[in-house]
Length: 333
Image (cartoon, rainbow, N blue to C red; front, top):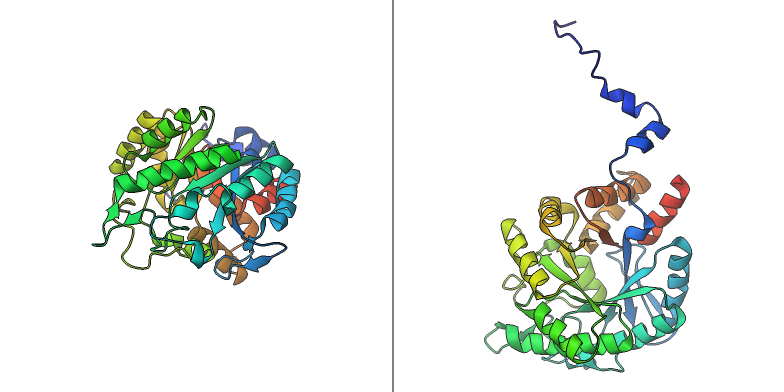
């Protein structure tokens, strides 16, 4: 026994002595209401394709997606983010299919809002699924990603989604000035109530690989480092967030989530609008793989990872675990 004398008035374990006491003093709670569920859609009918690098996730036609949305609603998950897998023959160098009113995304949005009017639909606004080059912007002959020309197309895309009934348009492209331009375009078209959730601090991360497999949207040449943020930079995120808020963003996002919790905390402390975080495909795939190998307890790490994101300051969490986490939370309650 060493000579240290315990201060008998300081026993933090008293607040951990039972599950009921721990619940009473818990600082952070996660809820099914926190979740946005990203889904992958494709054209056709009655089709579903597994995504090997994202176990449990599939590409679905809209009719099959309805069955999953019914399950989500029953679990309390009422925010959906559809991402389209576009046939190669519909892609071009300017992403023209992105604002086709009869395209996959607006058709999906109309169908969801007709059948599930209370479900919040949040659509991605970026060119990579529609661009034959695989970039979020228009690519010049010299390989430069053209900022202003891209923003013009993004405005058309956002208005197209708003006309279809999207509750939120979510620019994920990281072009300069796109939030202000999209806000002006939406307002001019009469969609003043359509919200903007901006991917404000989106990093050029290696954790997006499985997502690009899901949509076959990886860049054909080069990388995204001239428009997505350098993973080494923390303070720059505040600048990006401030610009997007000033331009009219209703919600700002940090992406990825789990490996950028320091950024998320600073953004949450700074931001005057709600902050979202995206637990991305690579983060999802890593946990799935470790659990499948028996190295981690799947149920516990799902909830712990989401708790960490919420504790760091996220108001909403985009996660492929949304349905599974909802079931786990129901079991806890």
